[in-house]
Length: 284
Image 1: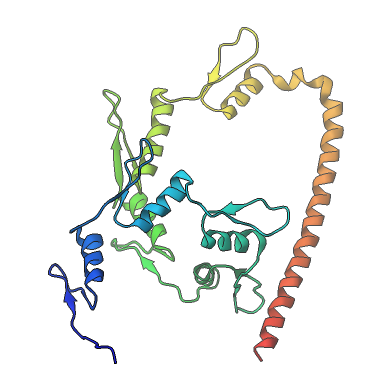
Image 2 (image 1 turned 45 degrees about the vertical axis):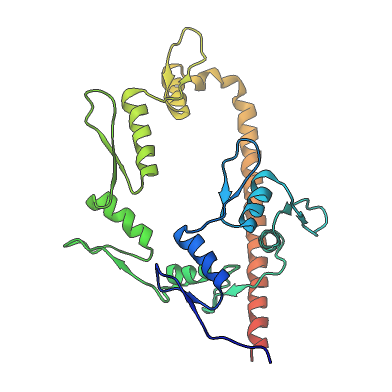
């Protein structure tokens, strides 16, 4: 019989233990950056390096499209292809409903279903108040509570100024501070301030009528200007008859589309109820 050993190799920097020396080397390289053999990308202008040949191979495939084995969608007429089998499975499930494990809502008369279990849990919490983890506002005399933590974060920032990312306006003499729940939202708020207050970064919408120098910061402002200043409605009197006929036809088409959508929704709802009933019968 082959000789076995129970000897372990312990990492001196943490509590990690293993039975193979090469496993310890890999651990120390990836976890503690010790005794690393770097694998460099040799493509021109690319400074990427990896701690394993497998990581470098994946980089070459994803970034430089080298050494790829393409996985093509088998559905007729779909030209989608991916670099990894996992990505193809996601595509088949999301786009073609192939290989999907449906997660159904078990609440009576609810036909909701989803391809992702986490989405079902979120649906049960938001829609039916089932297994809700409430996030209460910690501020005194504030009764706000949210079903999602990100909503509470937004509330604390906008209502109480807690956890706010502030960005000061750089225009000389301006004391405005833009805020947001993240640096990105704060930058968006600052961009609106700069456009509205200082006319910085504005996309101007100019009036195209003769001898008019008006310009607005939005298409809506320009439309209001034309209606108020130039009485555009009078200039279009000649087309009123055609416009009236067109609007009537458009309204009729809109009504027909609504009726068609309603019928489709009814059929879909009935179909989902049948599927849900069949599922329950199978479990009996």
